[in-house]
Every structure is written in structure tokens, then in C-alpha cells.
Image (tube, rainbow, N blue to C red):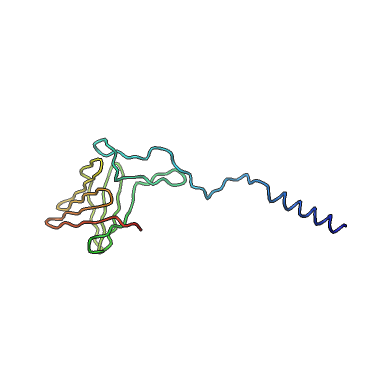
Length: 142
């Protein structure tokens, strides 16, 4: 009888302590930012090629990198810098990096240029014009 009483008290204590709610918040939950994250192009229309990444603590990053693929299958790393003072695109392939400045923005298309090189970003495609050469790139789904 004594063992049964001690066992039942033990089970009761364990069940009461395990049902206790934690006062701390779950730090693994990612909060969504309900603020407007649409960015306007230079002409005042919404620039659909740009989106901020918002971290858990609310800071916004303005650099976004993607991997594009050329028609020959070679990967190309493209980094968009959306800093309002210096909007650029950095294109890296075969250990060569080209940095182009933003020159024009339309609602669905952004153009970057430097010297004889021009890049037109439209949705998931990026078209490079370098002299007579035209290189088409498509964003990969990695």
C-alpha cells in the first residue's frame, strides 16, 4: 500500500511538472514582416525585380545574390546591390567580375550599363550585351 501511494504521488508530480507552460517565447519562430516591402524604381513605379530580405530582428538587407545559368550550361553568379545611393549589379563567371551601374528602371525591366557592356533584367532572365555578343542567362531554382 505504501509503494502504491508513493508511486501515485510520483506520477502525479511528474505529470504536473510536465504540463507547466513555459514563460519564455520560442526563439525558433520566424516573425513575418507585414510592412510594405515593395521598392519603387527611379520612375516611381513598383520595381518587380527587387525585393528586400528581412531578418528575424527586422533588419533589411539590400544585397541579393542569385545563380544564373547561361545557354551553354555554365553557372554565373549575379549579385544585386540595391543601396539607394549606389545601385549596381555584379556578374561573375570564369573568375572575372563585371560591375555595372543601374541606368534605367521600368516596372518590369531594369537596365544596367558600363562602357560597352549592358545587362537587361526582366523577371527571371538576364540578357547581357557586350559589343556584338548577346548572352542570355536564366535564374536557376537552386
